[in-house]
Length: 452
Image (cartoon, rainbow, N blue to C red):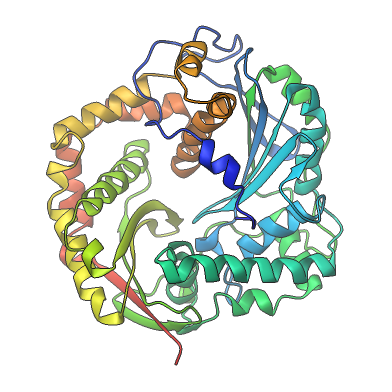
């Protein structure tokens, strides 16, 4: 995430459950297919475009998802996906998160880099042009690189000591589990970057063969948005290779290190990651992984042993590797000995999966998932009137589309495909998944301790 972290934007975003049951939108896009609330089109160079048209929306928003992420970093390049996020944005704006009325942001996750632009509808063309330049950037500023190195180091320094080092732990997991490293330079790898190396890396990450998905929310229709992005969107950046980077992470020897692992890193707090491989071939398997991760996260939030011990946990099911989908339990620790307490809580959450909140039962969790995905988007005008302030209202469509887009990216399914997969889910499938993939003997772990 760029520093500063667009505080005003984050503070005004709504956080309702995505796809809550609701009435069909009164202004559903005329070109949407079947039950799909989004209009879709493939653009130049294979870019996928999905558009949510809401005629009375106050903002036009564009999101671009790129197949780079903290779990996908190359060997010896921890956080380089994060560095890429910073550098492409700084190719148009040397500092700040606003260009007149146009606001923008970036976020690097486990398995994606997301670039956002928000603008008044009258400036949609300028906002789109900014995103086009990011995707096809061909000039890299050495001075900007040095500034962004400091900004990234500042992000780590501001989050990790407070127990929010989960992103950096995912980057460490990639280096240790995929690439076999035992002494990890989460900040150091970024500090050593040269401008030529950044150009080469970007050339691989942004080459035409890579998968990019572009989303739009606002008053513009599919045809209007497509026209803004009609030209070639991507090309290898200056100094980059023609061959695109393989977005699928590969471990040493073509596999992943397993078992009880340990490594040192250049962050100040210990951390533990426990991980399991889940099946990832069918739509039901992909969707189940996301539902299980959410349920386990809620169970851990209610575990009374963690907060008093200074342990901060999360669960993610977004990381896909050649061997399957990695379900990661991640916890920031007050000291390395607390890894045992965290892992005991992880196991309790797995054992309690059949009593997952908020419904308290697998049957309730399955029913809730089906209802959420079948509900579509809300009546925007009615919902907007219920919001506490105008800033929340103008970001409504962007926030709900972002929730949908993130779920689509993680599962590689469209909303209708997810709804169809959800309709086939049963409580027994989750019990079978727990028995087959989440058994105690299937656990792998990585304990990260600060360098001495």
